[in-house]
Image (cartoon, rainbow, N blue to C red; front, side, top):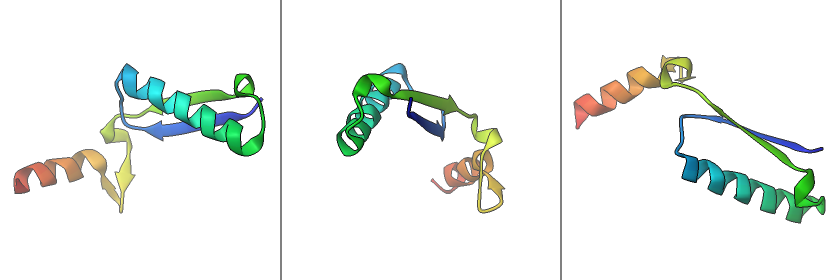
Length: 68
């Protein structure tokens, strides 16, 4: 059973549904494995638990909001 995992921010149910459908369809098309075999996990993480360039994403967003 192939597994596809996305780690990212919180998403709406509609966006998660679209991602799961798209990931499954393209992976099945490329690999020739039936769609029913795929399992997709979406792991949602708060911005306080993610960093980029050594800085918390939550802090980067605060800085961006101050600039606007």
